[in-house]
Length: 208
Length: 255
Image (cartoon, rainbow over all chains, first blue to last red; front, side):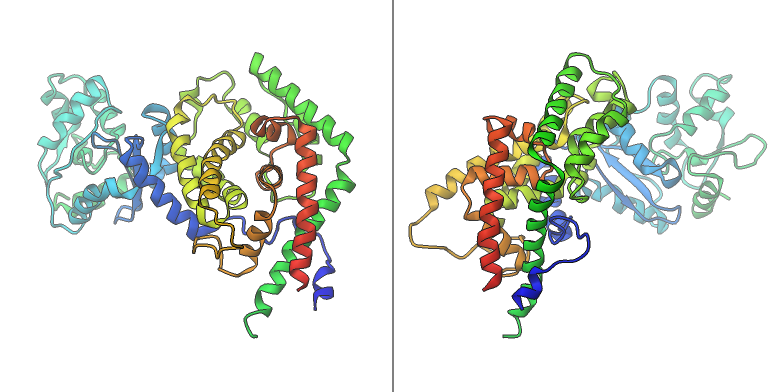
């Protein structure tokens, strides 16, 4: 028996019998690291993904609050790289910090929530764009406003294009309701998550 | 004895794997050629430290390819890390080119776990792994973009492991082998724990050089940087370790 075992054939990799990845151990260790990093104040950006009627959403939060919501079409890997670059490279998949956001989003998509009550970190938005985004929650659930109206409400009625850009670069779509901003001619307009996702959200809210 | 035959095959495979490693190393990477590769690697590191710049992949690959050709699964940390960081983001500041730490954990976590298990055994490996990555995460924003991430992680793991080795020797009771605590180091009593047990019989220095060179894929120059001493001494320690493993492991598998 042993002699048969000690003859080898083929070009088996060296150390091939060692599993490249011990999945169960890695999962457990990763969860332990996420908890320890959070406790040590090292978890600058925690993230998770969740499945929704508008596709998988990436949720990311700093210690201050929710900092990014991203649609799949934005490329989650790229979004994480941007977060590493713009916020901190200490980015870890750590779902616990996103529990509140995920729960509220689930309730929203189930039609049981009409406004979000979450700490937000708006550090990815600056200047006039941030001013615009700060006003968007004034457009209530189930309502829409035109880009022109949003610009006017922000005190710059001519800055229609800037208002549209602010919506297009909204780091917190769904939560900050840029989907409620539509074109003056009544058509739905563009959306960071795609026009189809915008239609889905407005239909959910009974606004379209 | 229905259970005893199951682990036997993997044990033998594992032995084969180690033996093949030894023989391939001898055949395909004779000492003088590998030494030349290391010298080049050091030269490149010095050169890069002085003036970071793009290193054409073609100039790096021959050395890496020769050293690691026997084992496709062992990564090529030094060259890969250098080449990608430079070619992707030449001259960028650290904070601008670092991937999310999550990517570091995903890419290198398994390697660090193998190293911790090899050096410490499965029982203490989880603690050492966790301490290593917590320390690494703390220091990560300051890591230079042209750093060799594997060598950096193994260096941290080495220090954490030393703490555990000291604690282990304080705990040690001279009454023969104690059963391993249940850990995540594979099936208890299976081939994998046999491997860790075989490694455990080696002197610490040999175990470390085997782990850092064969499991982490670091060239002997990097191993020597971590352990102190010369690359030649590291190579000797690894050779001695592999020779001893070959003996204990072969005999263990033959029983």
